[in-house]
Amino acid sequence: MFKCTIDRLLAAFICGAMLCLAGRATAQKAKVDWKTVAVADSATLSKPVLIDLYTTWCGWCKVMDKKTYTNRELAAYVNEKFHAVKYDAESKSAIKWKGRTFMYSPAYKVNEFAVFLTKGQLAFPTTVIIPADGSEPQAIAGYLKPQDMELILKYFGDDSYKKMSFDAFQKQLKRSW
Image 1 (tube, helix red, strand yellow):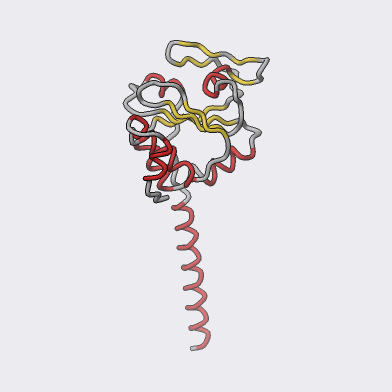
Image 2: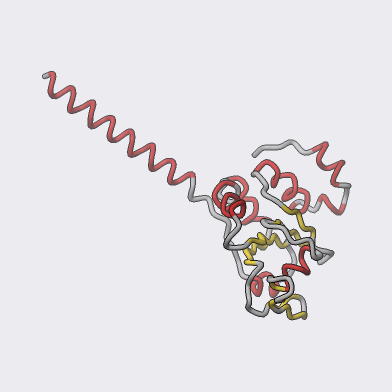
């Protein structure tokens, strides 16, 4: 009888551990549906464009991929409200955007598209928002936690930028992430 109880406890422990691991794997499967620049450019801008401007060597870019863009609420919001693009700033491929062609710039060691998006203020990672009305790209340099991204994403995703200043929006936003 004692052996049977130990076997049952061991089996219950193993099952519990497996369920816990399965729950963690499911929680981490939240993913942003990244599109290419060409897809975002060809889409009618009924939604703003979110561009994750990164480099392959950037440590904070990798942290943002693992900790920010896997947040369940953030990923769901981005997928619903934005055309999301992940773009390597050091890409040597020509990029077409809104009738312009951007090439790799040996002087900057990045693609001219990255220079255009950041107005020459290159830093990685940089989150770029291009509002649905096609106005100037808004570049936010540096690592952003999900809580920091919520403010920015909701400001543009809910079209609040058309109605109020960023400061006013920040004061009234009730954060949920």
